[in-house]
Length: 205
Image (cartoon, rainbow, N blue to C red; front, side, top):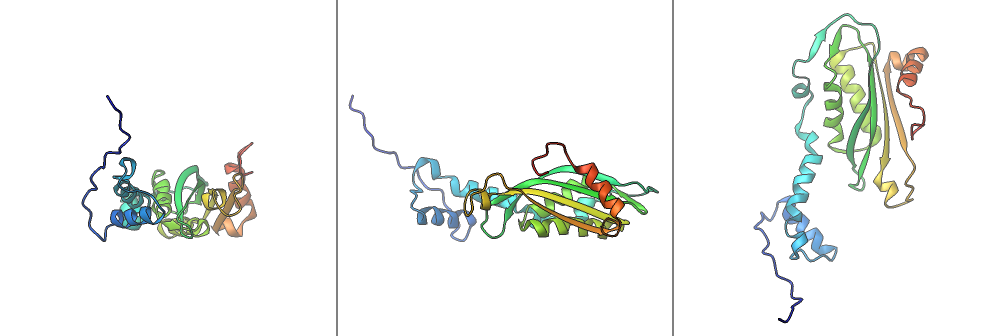
């Protein structure tokens, strides 16, 4: 029986002309792809779904995250949640950047449920971002919600816009910090925070 190399055409799904999927289909065509081939037929819908998830932070607010998980408790010791993994997208090139965030606060009258801190990080990370702004937003939000004696945030990240294009430096990392209240004013407090989150053989140290 004679073999054929003819490609079977897969029917394109119907799309709203203004949907992200429809626009993505046009982008794929613009870069020279054949959006009728089997591997790409559903790609615009998958890309829309992924983009909506990666930017879902726009539809999240602090009140829904905290959801009453604030507790009146006398505590004067530093609370640290470190190595909070996050993934975000650079607003300049729409390429990912990813890393870890270390968050600390010095309570005054309130404590927050520990799981809420990574959720606050995710809320801001799942937006088009700058690492500098992301770091500051997390710190300022916790300062506003908790009214603590101070907040410290350190963000360590690698950026695909530096790794895949431009200078193409795969091993370079970026570190940003935001120190508010006692973390800015008190060297001992700041040093304690830094010692608690530092790692021997850590790639960023």
